Image 1 (cartoon, helix red, strand yellow):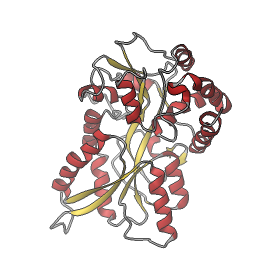
Image 2 (cartoon, rainbow, N blue to C red):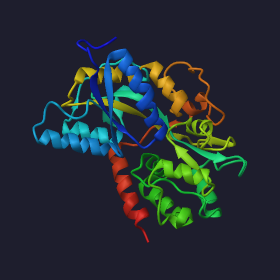
Image 3 (cartoon, helix red, strand yellow):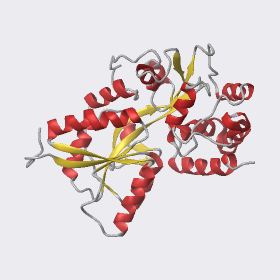
Image 4 (cartoon, rainbow, N blue to C red):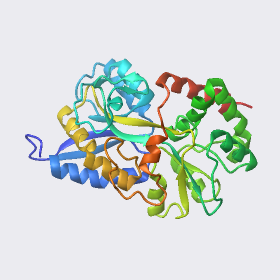
Length: 341
């Protein structure tokens, strides 16, 4: 249904992480065309490298007294960035949308009470990938992975935090070994990493390239179907598969929010209603390798050869640590691992 008064398309601006080429194409083509046809909205993507950039901009606008006519109508957000935005008072709410996920997804985000200031969009769960043509079985525990890395110098790395995939990889050590123990384990592993740990990939795309070029032996992602999606577009060989640790892997929900000074709040809420619909979430799961909705029965979508069964992922889902612990651990990783001599 077109929005009232839309003789010509109304612009809706969406601040979106732009680090994945396939996702960018999907939004620039599929989503843009469909929201124009369905609602009379002209989608404008506002790309960013890290959500903190958007939060900082909103804080600056609030300090300058810009309470209307903001540059963003919808922002993709979660975790420590949601906590910062909530504390700064730069989000509008409550947002009322149909519920696609379990109740806890609407209650807290990395330990921060949501209170209607954002609504769940996608769920994510960390998986790792390896190529069965190189070796038959991967290590399935953190200690086993550490032993593998030491036995195969230069064949493993991870994106440098705060890149979110690299950050969540390190948080498995935080959960399993505690704050100091986790940092010690990552520091112990560092000399055996790709390029002796003197540098790290900046993005998940760079990690994918290293893996595809056989420079390292593992890839990783928050999207359980990412390897199947990469196989389908010819980036990864067909022999790649994914795994989770026996103790589980970290998962979370990411959210959509409306800034306090959105230029067109009604258009923003319409876009959110589209993006959080079951139809859209399942389409993104099928085409982009996202996680599948956790609420309700198995959606029955074709997962691809490298995607783990939904039941296994659900059984191995570990919640994120508190957002404040995440920020402290990322800061400590930089000081005690990245810069350690």
